[in-house]
Structures are given as C-alpha cells and as structure tokens.
Image (cartoon, rainbow, N blue to C red):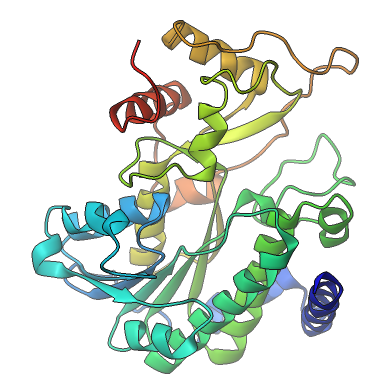
Length: 362
C-alpha cells in the first residue's frame, strides 16, 4: 500500500511540476487572480449561502460561528450530522435559522457536490492532520473533489485552509531570508524527513492551484501557523494537544525548536476577510509571533504554576534554535490590522481545556 501511495504522490508531483514549469507556480497564482474567469466584482455582502467543509473542526467551528454572526447562511459538511460531537455547532447563535449540516465525505464527490450546489462560496477547511503516509492521498483527493464541485456549482470564490507547512520546510533557505507567500516547502525534504503532514498539505495546495486554474475557480489560500485558542468542540485537536502535553506531565523536557502561533479567532477572521475582499488573491500567511519552546513553557509556568511544566530542554548540546523571519504584510495590507497577542492565545487555550474537563482544575 505504501509503495503504491508513494508512486501516486510521485506521479502527481511530476504532473504538477510539469504543469507549473511555465509559468512558475507563483506566476500561476498571480495570473490566476488577474485572468480569473469569475472574478469578484464587488465586496461580498452578508446573507449569502456558503459551504464550510469539515465544519466540526477547530478552525471551522469558529469560522461557522463568525459566518453566522455576519448573517451568512451556512452549510457545514460533517461525516454524520447526527453525531453528538457536532452538537456545539447546532448551539451557535443563528444556527437554528441559518445552519444546515450535510453528511459528506471528502472522498465522495457526489456528497460534496450536493453540499456545494447552490452556494455562493466555499471554505475548504477539512483535511486530515496526520503523519500517517497512508492518509496523505485523502488530503489530495479531497481537495481535488472540492475544487471540482465548486467549479460545477459556479461558486464565486473558494477559500482553502492550508498551512505554514507548505511554506517553510526548505533546508536550503538562508537564515536571512524573510519567509513570505512566495516560499514553498521542498517536497523531497518533507518526504525524506517523513514529515507527511507538510508533504500532504503542500501537494494538496499545489493540487488546488492547478485544479482552480484548469477549472476557472477563484481560489484564495490562508496559511496559518500553529492555531491556539478556546475550543468550541468537545474533542482535543492536534494544535491544542501541542500545549496540553506540557501540562499533564506526559513530557519531562521540551524540544529545542521554534514555532509560530496564532489565535483561532484571527484565523477565522482572516478566512472571512480574504473571502469578502475582491482584491484578495494568492496566499496569506497568518501568524502573530514565533516562540522558542523554552519561551512557551515559561509563559505556561507563569500563568499555571500548579501544573508539572518541564523546565529543561532535551537538547543540551546544540545552540538554541532561532526563529526564522516571516512576513504577514500581505494580510495586514488587506485589513488585518492586529492580531491577538500570543500570551492571550496560550492563556485562553489552557482555560478552555480546564472548562471542557480535559485538564484538572488546581
């Protein structure tokens, strides 16, 4: 199975690479906006019908909440609308009147199409967060199906939730390079280091751009770093688990590594901003700041000293890793004038874990 999967990826990667040689991928993204068959002619008004894939997820739940607040009618795709894990969506303000949950599978084109037909826009947030190479193909096929369904439905715009993982994984990048939306992760490096999450997200985003160009779909992409903040859903998602492990005693040391952080409310806001702004195009990095893991545990220890937070780095040999330079100028120029501070992100994440019963109260 794995050998077949790697063959599939290699074939797709080659096809994408060949299709994007001239113009280059970044030029394709630029041209995609300026030559789009269906450009947005005016600012998008509330009251439209939009589809959010994977509506029960961490980012998607906050996006659904924001869309309902803004007056949109929302169709949310979930695997099983009757599953109690989706009850938090039904309890949102405006949900009774303007939210419908559709049973859909990313790998089932017809179920996606049924959810998207009649919509003005699509927010594709659903994608497996995994380092399992067996699940990489799901992200690629799911993205392809969403773009194809959006094309058939003639939606005005698709907003795709990608990741910083499609941008920063490049061992050949100079430390002085400012990481921006023109940067792409090195697929061979992702594969050789078995970082299947970044590999899958990169190929999925490349697939989205190639399919959008082919089908004439107006596509905009948001590339957030690690997303924190309060949970709307009952389950713990991967990015919040990143914080929780330092509070439960399950890890005794912290790694010598850096990570960028952003509040989930800001990520939802960025999605709506790029959807509603006619001039939005291409990719948008979304992050508040970067922290070394040592800085993260120091913040946790200051706010929550009652938990067994590690104080020692697992790497006592190498120099302390430095954060790479990044730019969010493009998103700020679009109107994202400020971000929720990282300390507030961290504090609200832990308080939410306590309130949901995932962490014992002191």
